[in-house]
Image 1 (cartoon, rainbow, N blue to C red):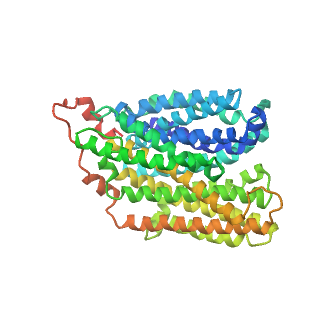
Image 2 (cartoon, rainbow, N blue to C red):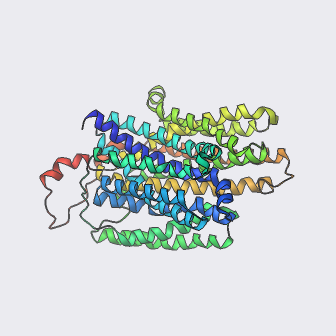
Image 3 (cartoon, one colour):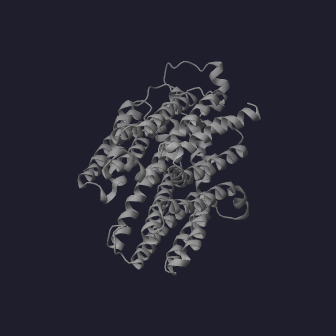
Length: 499
């Protein structure tokens, strides 16, 4: 593949990553405008945001494993086409119920698109050094996508383009999706190796278990109490799923969660780091928004723009990862988690300063927090991919992204409960003294600092395990079933590019 084709192909993949990140956050800022325009109730607006996350998390692993069987490029392009169409449906939705359905479908198509990205990047860039650079850029794009979703949504709503209010925030995906599809032919065609059919039983159990756990976490204590019945349901279904996966593997099948991937040395610790890190990040996003709008009484747009330094810091941290790694003795994720924890502790002190002086100090705090996050994500993703064979990159990517969604939901639920408990009121209630807001933020920041510290300690443990490349080299290749056809010359020639 020529360098020009490689860059254009990577650009298409990164644009898709950007879209999925933006749409996970964009409706949060646009929610008041959506509620007014569609005459929707608050519970409906909650579902507009939650529907995307729930579908995304529930179908992620299934989408990843489908890519292993059908081919990552094929599933990616179908996912992009579906995401583009459902974005159009979101943008033209006439009422809240139709918007909720469209958002659910949008999250479902994103779940088939997103997990293919890292597998195709690995197939596109076989050279280890260039692959590390590509994954660093991937981390930068994640940061830009998050910040564009938070701040860009507010700017688009404020601009009221063509009098359409919130709708352009979702319609912008349509031309981007068409451009990605136009570049799809530049992506390498991966040859599926998996000889078995998709594990439909495992997929069905996952589609039940994931939403049963995600829904109460997403809505938190503010949602209906009956939603928490989903937790025991999720636990029961998860036990059934584990037994079904083990039985399928013993019978020679290929389960949705391949044991050779789940039990790869360091994989479970890596996924635990992902869970702790993204729970910390989402908790910070939530309480920072609460504090800016209900404590410091910033407008929603001003509060959204306060996240721009965090995105810039994240992008800089992702881009500087390799340079920082050459300057320090410990792995950059350890330093990144340590910096994030220290910054969170410092923020607890910042909010005790006079109200009028806090804004510039908070800008510095979130910039450094973003930089610390950027030091963690790219090497963590690279490490997860490096612990499995290329043919299993889709499964590893799907698991990591699913755990990311659970981490985001868990962080929002725990940080939200803790913030409101310490505050002794619901954020936004009139008459709550400013000092109480500062105390609640400080207490939650210390809790999140503990979470970041846990992620750092797990990263230290990971550092003492064999390196990802060495691990992947020792993972046995999946056995070919008896009677399986020998690989064709085409398959053999492309096997190194298969993700």
